[in-house]
Length: 314
View (spheres, rainbow, N blue to C red):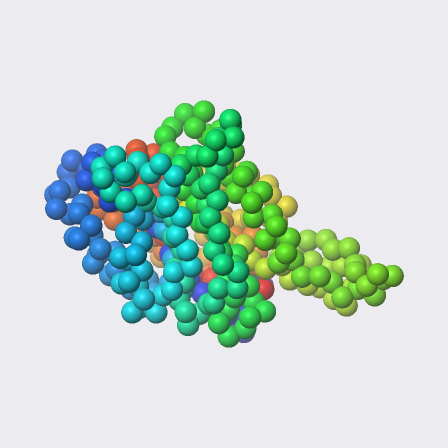
């Protein structure tokens, strides 16, 4: 992870904010009911986001998208996209469907390719409630620097059968991103018979090609979300085993190799954020847990908020 002095830096917030409806009807018996209402929570959410001042915000369980978008715009954010859940559990409480959202700071990024959402399929081929949302961003001052950002909310609940569902969903996510990862791999300017060399990827995110004029860089891929799983689980292993060599930002932070250092820690908190092949030179990580805000569907995830800053050398 060589740090490039002129690499533009950016920061990310990953947050499951707990859906309206699920908040009031969850297991938060020790929380004042008034604190679970959206009108009370919104100013607190905005305060946290303003303090984090991240360049990219990824959210799950958001069912007040238009409201939050309106409040984030004066802070310099644009909405990249929103994917409401198919058959959202919030609907049973007469609330709008919750879903996935990606926001970005207009001074830092532009949308290079519009956001796309995709629902996962179950083992019978039927559309499931969960899915993923992804967008291709480019640096506001250098369009050659691109970044694929994806966010997801995998199946909740504990048990081996649920683990297999989460693994299947992660596999579908990686398959769905394959075309973007392929398109964002720069073509070599080879000197071979057809002008194209054959490339081989390296762990630092670069690739060297036979018959090329030098190494090329792979655009970073960032996958965030509420995986409803612990580090070392099957979905996380699927990411780490992928050919683009995703790395858990939390694993990097905990490794003590100087790439990322936690500002605060909790033995029960972890950041569900992965980056590909070292193209993100992660610099710093912070995590937060909001009182009374957790996973509204009773899942085993114990971390609902995280922020990190990275340098982009793509």
